[in-house]
Length: 65
Image 1 (cartoon, rainbow, N blue to C red):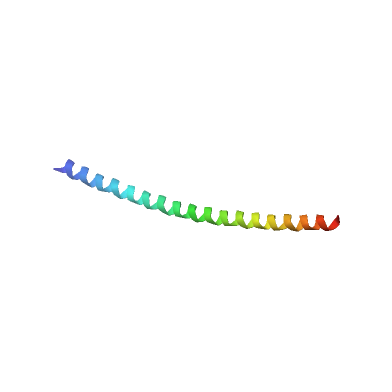
Image 2: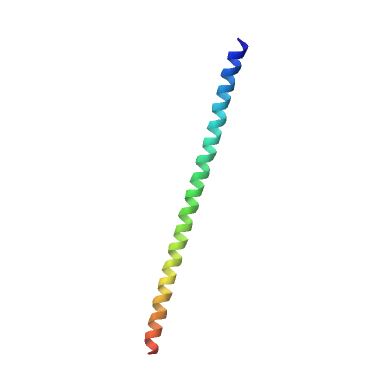
């Protein structure tokens, strides 16, 4: 009777450990997703700034002719 009870207890313990690890992975995946979103926004802002600067530079070059 002892061994079946021990097996059941260890099974529940294993499931609990897997559940905790799954929650940790889920939280880290959400954090990574937010970080990717912020980085994408920064890249888009930098691209828009570069485009504006190139347009201004082209206008200045045309004015010098």
